[in-house]
Length: 326
Image (cartoon, rainbow, N blue to C red):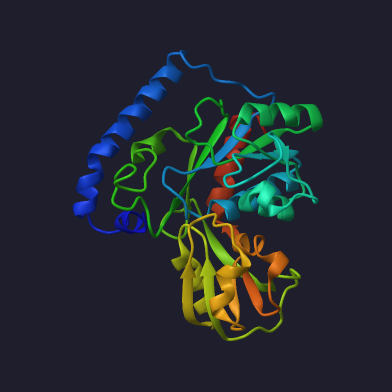
């Protein structure tokens, strides 16, 4: 599987052409499904408040979570009451819908929802049935807006606003649909979303990920000093960006260890590193806190939006009558 994923971001190869027939089947199935929704053969549901979807048309590694963290905080700062729903990929909750709380474990919630809850002051509800999650929020909370973390392709859910995140470095890879390429939908899908948001430079409506400190995995405390060399460990879609950020902070990466996205870490995954300093992402750190050594650290990054991104966001919210200004 790793060789297939690597081929997505290289010139088309034998593997690409070998998988193209499967991509054609994937494309046909997606088109039929969208037609069934558009003709009403499969019913959509409407939530009691507007839904804003943050998604993408490619698989993983687009930097969606830092943008979601910034967006929720920004919306709260302008006076909106917000809740977040998520599929909860990798979660093992006792039931669904499931509200992530301070007593939840990362195994129950999944890494990204757990991180969202730990950084945000708003309800975070997970479950494969997004309608049930919305109904749970309606019963338990008074909110103005629901943010759907991912769900761009979840057409059963009517949405008021769609944001699509695009990585400025990796773009759309080889431009092919799964499994020959990384795309869930063709780039033409971007014409129908409310806003295309670029992670990185290259477009005026963008945000950049800014390193905002090194923290201890075990205690969560920000470090004033830390080792200048160590091992970079990650289970994310695009580890190159993370490793580049470490290098820019002057950390000499003596070894890298890449696990599959959303990997459920165990203590044994780190045995071969001995007592060498380990650096990881914040999403990785929430899964390792319970068994972390003293010299394990994580890099925190925050989204820094462009002025145009904020202006476009406000204009969309006003146009959709979600926000009426001061």
